Length: 71
Image 1 (cartoon, rainbow, N blue to C red):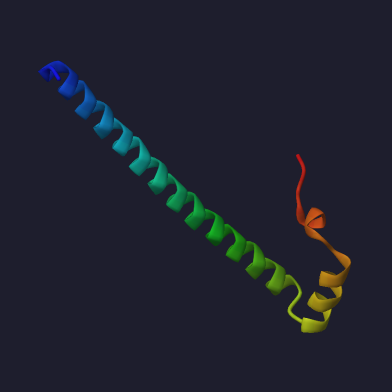
Image 2: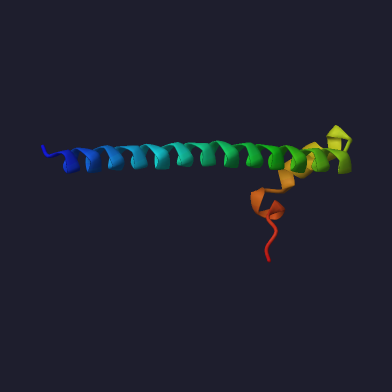
């Protein structure tokens, strides 16, 4: 293998690793943000309906599409 091909091969491998590492960090960051979002949403639902009886009754009547907001 000639030296230029070796350098090109090494460069490609390094760039692939950088991309994979960045993708993994992005996934971790998105998961953290979504977890915080869902926790905040749940906290607001619990603040608005503090009585367990209300929450239980609502949970039986509503499904996820009732909570989705459309633009």
